[in-house]
Amino acid sequence: MKEETKYSHNWNLDNLYPDGSDSSQFRDHIKHIEIKMCNLEDELNHFNTPQEISESSKVADIIDTIGYIRINLSQANSYITCLLAQNPKDQNAPTLKGKTSSINARFEATLKKLQKILLRTDHQLWEDILDTPDLHSYNFILNEWRKKADMHLPHDEESLVADLMVDGYHAWGEFYHSLIGSIKVNIQIDGERKELSVGQAINLRSHPDEEVRKKSFYALEEIWKEKEEQFAKILNHIAGFRLQVYKKRRLENILEEPLIENRIKEETLNAMWRAVSKSKQPFNKYLNQKANMNGHAKMKLYNFWSPIKNTDRKIKYEEAVNFILKHFSQFGTELESFTREAFDQEWIEAEDLPNKSMAAFCASFPMSGESRIFMTYGNRITNVLTLAHELGHAFHNHAMKPIKGINRQYSMCIAETASTFAEMIILDAAFAKAESTEEKLFLLDEKLKRSVMNFMNIHSRFLFEERFYEERKSGIVPSSRLNELMQEAIDEGYDGSFDNASIHSWVWTPHYYITKSPFYNFPYTFGYIFTLSIYARAKEKGKEFEKDYLALLRDSGSMSTEDLVMKHLGEDITSEAFWQKGIELCVRDVEEFITLTS
Image (cartoon, rainbow, N blue to C red):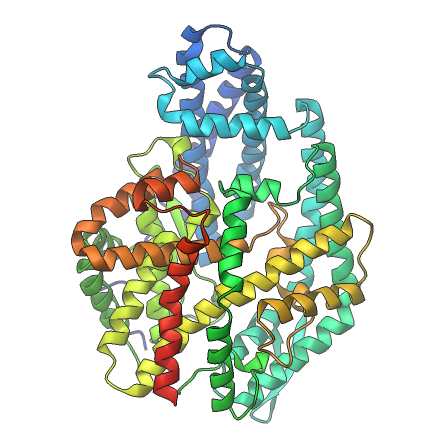
């Protein structure tokens, strides 16, 4: 029976475009983007490298058009994502997705063409043009474009590479997801034989019964061992293609592209990892303590996600909403009023339905100035945290509303800032409200699992990927060697905390198979520690910090990350000291956990 509540469990997509995938209004929107795209392509065919400072207004007009198309495309892509989430069997949505994917490809190709044209501008003239009122607000983005253009091949060659990627590079990534999706895992639970998807089997890692967790873990390990050759081929082909493209583009350092995309210096990344490497011991202590509570000397991987205490406390949806509103309001009035609007205007799809995807997401609708959140609410504190997390993403979208189109795109390093910040508000509030030691331990464990994932798990992923790419330069890396590299990375990343690490983590970690960019890992750790610093400052300043926080979010798409942090926090992120301060906040959680469990 569906819970009665004044807050809807279902989102409203019709007030964006009525009639779902049959919407004539949405199809008109796509046609409008196509027309704008054709106009832009035509304009660029007649656009030459600037020769006079007076041409700055013409450049600004093109940039404004690009910004306009980008936010329209974002709106369309988000709508299709939501349609497929609410009904994976929607017959029309894939066709619509095909149309927007085609426009996306044309848009990216046109953008690269413009970047190449701008790259040829005389250096002094370029500096003068950027100084004009027309282009001053685009200064950072335009310089970033010039840097990217310098990495790219000539337009015709770049287009050829893009075409080859579709049936080569990207096809391997799609094949990986298809292969993973086809795997069935047979596990006996409570005397009953069940056939589960990989996702369902992995979700059993948080099952309260250790025997179930153990069976799931070893059943998956058997499958990975059986299929490791197939996955090794996929991973090697993705990496090999990427390395060939980098070689053509004269990129020696595999980190160069992800560093540019994340707008950080290698010096910053190294400082962060040094600070993390020096701070493993407290988290090792936490893992050992939790292992002891499960009756083991060292942590078993299948016990990492186990609940520290079985808590039966149910939190109804309306209670969760009111709790979030109450504690968001103590941080700032804009966060509270925005969140209230999200619930009142039915932006959230939270109903607990069979066969519904467990993956939560937030989709931005920049043309409408709205967001939509998809999740499954199951009356647990972890669901409350997920809801707060996705509302944080939506708040970042809200903060960017007054910002011009091309200055709205922020890096992945910053992408988890507002979401993690919102989650921290609710975690701390729930901990303060907890009446029993059991409830406090449950919440502390939730916080510490996040810390371990960011300081240890993500570090191991980074180490593996870095070493794998280095070896891949010399040829195919066999599955046996991939297992060795993974074992070494886990031992170093987790500081030897596990006694049965999954050497096949390289198989079931989907981030290694993302074809958009390598190293889809370090931005998580970066964002986590960065947010800790912001949150610590917010607790000191109270509600008056919201204005500064909004300013930071609004600048997140138009500055280097080093400049962003210096401007808004007055901190040097190339220094280990910045990262150490954030890590120390998490070390205090370890100390409290040890005290409560001793």
